[in-house]
Image 1 (tube, each protein chain N blue to C red):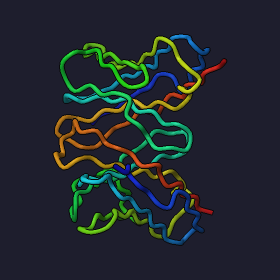
Image 2: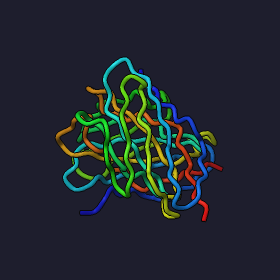
Image 3: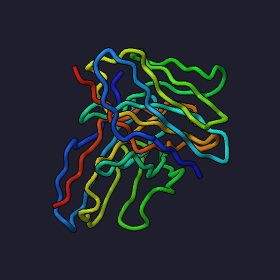
Image 4: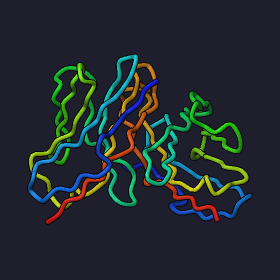
Length: 113
Length: 116
C-alpha cells in the first residue's frame, strides 16, 4: 500500500517570498508523483508530475518540485509567491501498474500582503 | 474542449434519501474516477470505471454506494439511504483512452453533498 504525508497543514508566507511545501511518501513499489492545486470551491488542477528522468520537474505558474528517491520526498517550491497562489495544495502518488491517485492531507498556502 | 462536468454542484438530502451524482468526462476520455473529500481531509479514491466496466472499486464503501459508466451518458455515483457521514465533496476525474497510470487525471468542480 502507499501513503503520502504532507508535513505542514498550513503555510503562511508573505507575498514575493519563497515557499516550500513538503511531501513524503511511502511505497513498496515504484510510483509516479503529482502535485495538484485546489482553489476555493473548485476542482483540482495539475501543477506538475514526475514520471522518470530528471528529478527536477517544472510545472505551471512558476512551481517546481524535486524528486528525491533516497528520502522518498517530492517537495514543491516557488521562488516568489503571489496573492493568487493562495490555495490548497495536494501531493499524490500513483503506483506503477495501478490507476488510482493516493493523496496527502493537503497544505493550505496563505499569502499575506 | 469542455472540461469534466459534474452536476449538480450542490445537493441537499435528508437522511434516508437517495443521492445521484453525475459526471461527464472530457471529450474523448473513456476512463472515469470518483474521489471523496471529507471536511479538512484529502481526497480518497472510491472507484475507477471504463465504459460499462468497473475496474477498481477498492475504495467504495461496501453498502449503499454504487457506480456505473454506461455506454451512453454520464457516469453516475449513487448513494442510497444517505447518512450525515456521507456529507462531503465528491469529485470526478477522467483520463484518456491510453489508460496508463502516468496519464493525467482531469478533475471536475465537484458535487458538494449535504445530508440534513
